[in-house]
Length: 320
Image (tube, rainbow, N blue to C red; front, side, top):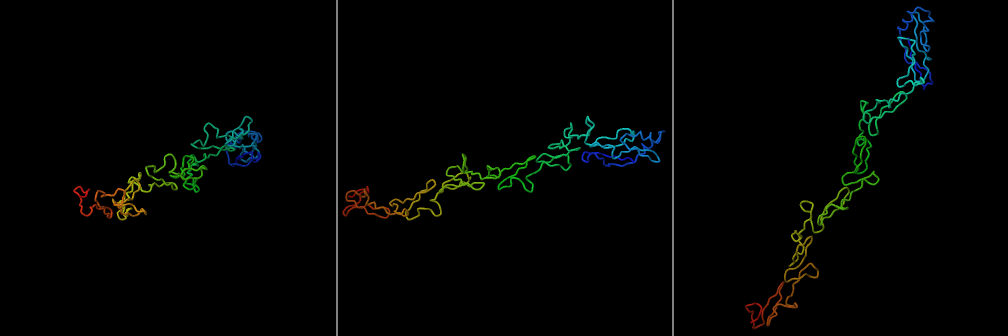
């Protein structure tokens, strides 16, 4: 049986048993040599132990064969005189014969060299990981993007915030009608009604800002056009309940408003909501003022006649 031991720096250079296995090659080789038992044992490397059996002699590792840190003891089945001490995997022999760590991450073909992979050297080995924003793929030989926006506690989760995943990261933005606050962790309303190019800026348009949006309307006396991007005059005089609808009142539509007046022969009352008769016969320049003419006031008009003994001439503007 051959025992393989190793010594590491972690256990203070003490050897621990790694493997035990039988070998017949060395025993047969030593048994076939015609010399004394002591001479045959001398064929073992000095660090090996010579074990004497009834059927021959074997060279084997012992707990004291290879005491240097990070070494292992393996007996050559071909030539037991070869030094059985070698470095553990992940270590190389330096110029002083010590076993030192191999930095696999600095080799010409380093591990973990796939896209966004990160190699971290360890004592006798290495660890593969991924850059921030990436995670190890199922095959442990690639990095896949972490969708931070799908996590249980996604970023940008403040009111009206929007998370957009990118390769290896994410971008926070805001819903339409909102913009990022100065603290970069909140969304504030965009006042579309302010600025150099406000909304609803057509003639007689009115813009009302709302949370995340705006409403277009029109000034009093105007209504939204069919295209919802213009204001057209409201003809109040043609409504179902028109203004100026008192007796002898007249409604005149204007752009965005209206004017109340009265029919000929009538004038606006002091209450501005009624029409009073105009007594034309009492005016500064009354009608029918020709010689022997008589003026008689009527509702909204007057009648010209002549004094007794006279009649209206054919011109209706004289008495004969």
